[in-house]
Image 1: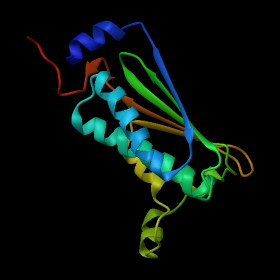
Image 2: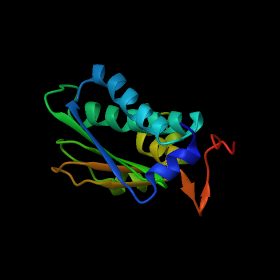
Image 3: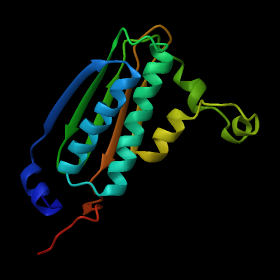
Amino acid sequence: MNLKRTVQILKNKKQTYHLKIPGKTENLELIRTFVSRLAQMSGFDEDDIYKIELAVDEACANVIKHAYEGKGKKEIDLLLEIDYKKLTIIVTDEGVGFDVNNILKRDMKEYLGQMKVGGLGIHLIMSLMDDVKLKSKPGEKTEVRMTKYLVKDGKIKSKQVDDG
């Protein structure tokens, strides 16, 4: 299906998809496939699909590693909302939470100069997606809301437009 047709179908309609899955590393491939298929069906080009897939993979890997400490006993909740302008993915965990300001206020030059391993996931997600919102507090669940626009400033951004 080409992008023009997708826009016609989705205009003034919002579609919602939900996936709740155990927070285990072996489920990351299923999550990536789920998200990438929906992004493809929505009309995103290969470059944007890759960015969306990578951002969601990073968010879910963070849940598994940091919120669930690799134990996989709790679930990752993914909610995808699609309309003709954008795809929004909300990843929610049942973990321990964190201080968002500690991550967002980090001086990246200084941090990278310390040669630490890891700690760049949220910054990577923010560089891949058009809009990212984080909700978390220590001791509470975390929600990462990521949006990629298909239509920006009234113009279709994807390269898959078929005028024929």
